[in-house]
Image (cartoon, rainbow, N blue to C red; front, side, top):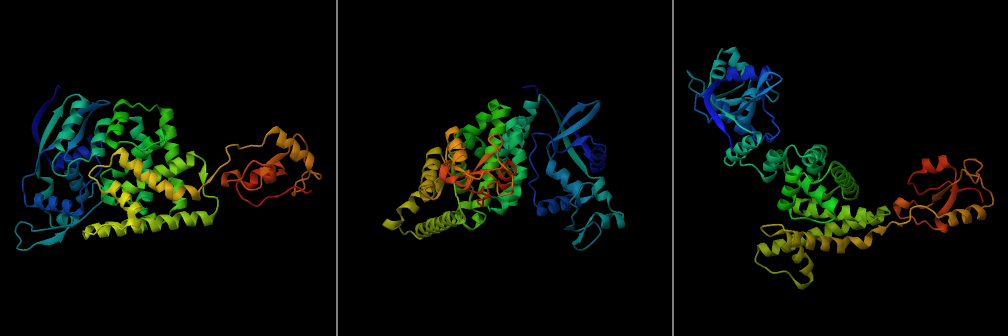
Length: 435
């Protein structure tokens, strides 16, 4: 380790200048998202107005294209708050404090300070600054160490700091931004958890689980894949596609998941992995009735698990016919969620849902023999749109679409022109040829 540091100070006015001239970087790759609540920000401005001392901010001083850049290692929330209050950054707010020379506290904002010519209470405030020099790996270690107190870093924030250059983590971050609203609408995360990058951690877990086709031991597996960047770009792209497919399927199947316990992150992870496995295995719900049945079963199961949980809270044991719900509850009530618990939980959910799903025919197309039989057994080889079909340009359509469980059998086949077949898509209604 080759760390060096210098102690200095800067006024808030100096900070304004650095920010406006783009010499202050609040978002270096290793930095976490904003985690302060509005009350934290108001309290900071109150402290500055009253001239209370604040902890030092830490900067990593480097050069970029001939310019000096200060990466903020620690103090992002404080600097951000000052910039917001003054209107230099979006997010203006007011605070309640007692100005010098007054006898009572009152709410005011930056514009009010300017009107009474007291903005210097902010701009002249002196912030202690520690400038740190060293290799980027050492700077990241400083960041992690400093942020182990106060609002300590979550495991995912530490991973982000250490492995922010990982291609896998960058793709997970992109997907997390894409599905942020979806995860909140499903009730999996709230805004505070999103701000602490919990959704990124879940996305990472699901990408890796879906790619390897099994649940995983979270911490060990995620650290390993990010530390070594062992998933190449092609594998990362595949994992990303699997997650997109799984989330789209979940949105379609269970749009009201937030009303059940399965919206809790532990349960949601298991359900998502199972639905991803069903997709890989060609398991589908072929109609609305089956979809509704799957939903009804999940709702009932969730309610029964909650019932058992309530009994346990009241020091009452589960009945014999509640053993399944008790077993499931055991997998989510331990201190750690290891791979064995996850597999047990998935096994229980699979036992509930698997029989409702139909399996796609592994054979997507029709054989050459089937094509000949269908062609020769059709007397009038004209599509219902009026197109005359020839041996060189006819297509064979699944009357019941393959994507909805239709089999590649003669009883489910019909001649069709290429345009009609393409426009039909996966709809069940078919433009049959005239017999």
